[in-house]
Image (cartoon, rainbow, N blue to C red; front, side, top):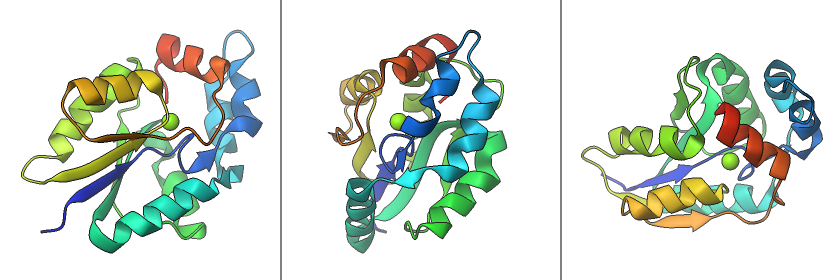
Length: 158
Ligand SMILES: [Mg+2]
């Protein structure tokens, strides 16, 4: 069985910068933020890394996006030619910070499998993964958004 390579989507594969403004109003407009994800431009570094990883690993996507974004996310990944693989998403009512929501999802995903690498852009998420003993690659190519980080931390939506 091949090892897993686990990829976050927002900020790793997808450029979310055009829709962060939906989170900068009060209250944040999460529905518009996610609806606009279909217009995300793929990040070339993420594309290259995921297709490279797919040579030796089974690619899995572990995103903080809620389940209701599943079909749109599947469509976006296939439209842009990302490797095929299952998508693990948070349940619709789960508003925990990503650093708390994602590690348990990874643990379930990794049962009986070797995880070669997990790639995420969020510093807090990467810290949590490292602390749990995973091999982490932090994506630093998307440009950090304080608005997005604050929203993820406070509203726990992505
Ligand atoms: Mg992310």
